[in-house]
Image 1 (tube, rainbow over the protein chains, first blue to last red):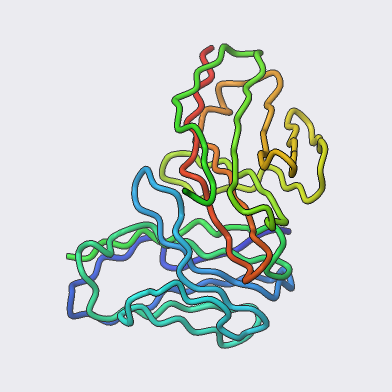
Image 2: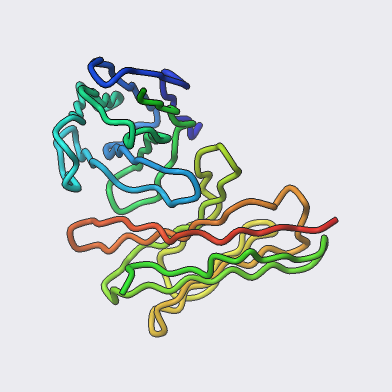
Length: 112
Length: 111
């Protein structure tokens, strides 16, 4: 089973709201990732967790705050977002960092 | 110079033909190479991964890696209209575990 789940599927939020995106995998993977994808562009890496520790933070604004409560869960906390943050947010996981990544279905975020 | 480069296309092939997609990368230290298929509005789906020089076949798909020339390719045999999608090449650089996507190649298979 190579399933990564993400909730919610769609999210509309105002610029003053606080919301969270959730990601879960039960494949025993020890690396998890957050990506942002704009229309007709490739995914952009935001954060990488390896063995539940933040391994890579690609200079993402502080209004995005990741959290890895355990090896199966990954959250992305959102606060004071801008309209330009509207995008498809993808979660992925891999056995360890070097290996193939499996993506969840994504959360379509709209900031109004 | 971009880390991973792909011809954006669009690439059109008739049904039943072989589609050939190419990707070059800049860092000789890159260790892992991946092909993803992405339908419009959907998330990327892993098609192939390859770690060693040479060819790797899986059904209608063949990935080819040439580290000396720093390119990786994907061949799709007996192309079907359902193969119409954007194909993303991705590379893991190893050192620092940086993971980079190319900009993708749009493939259309014409019935």
